[in-house]
View (cartoon, one colour):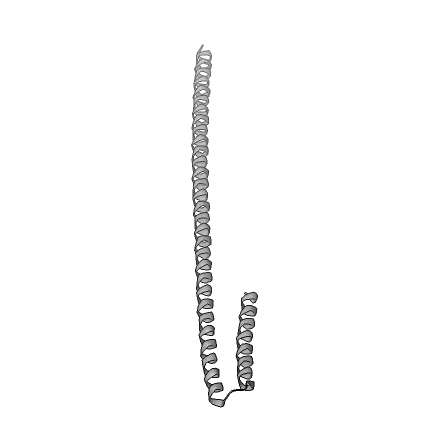
Amino acid sequence: MANNNEGAAFFAGLVIGGLVGAALALLMAPQSGEETRAQIRDKSLEYKDRAEDGIITARQRAQEQVSVLQERGKETYEKSRQSAAEALEKGKQSATEALEKGKQSATSALEKGKQSATEAIEKGKQVVSRTKADGTESEAAAEA
């Protein structure tokens, strides 16, 4: 950016210096006043046209640079948006996998709990059956 400003300042100085030099050369030339004024006018118009052409060229270059920078900005934005979308998708997938593992762990724990409860009930029934059998034997022995 600094180079563009320096280049523009140099160009402007060059044009102004050229105009001043041309005007002085025409004023110092051994011609009549009318011829000198006509030459100054012609050269001024010529330099004005050159300056306008330079300005038009500079504007075109600036517009081209703006277009290039806008395109780069759009590409960067699109890449960033795509990366964010991919990261979001990976996050969703990880969350889904974690949820599924959690469900499996909960189901497994529930099944183990059911199995443990069933075993405990079965043992309790066996203890009750033995206790009844022992109580029946005790009654029979007491009657005898």
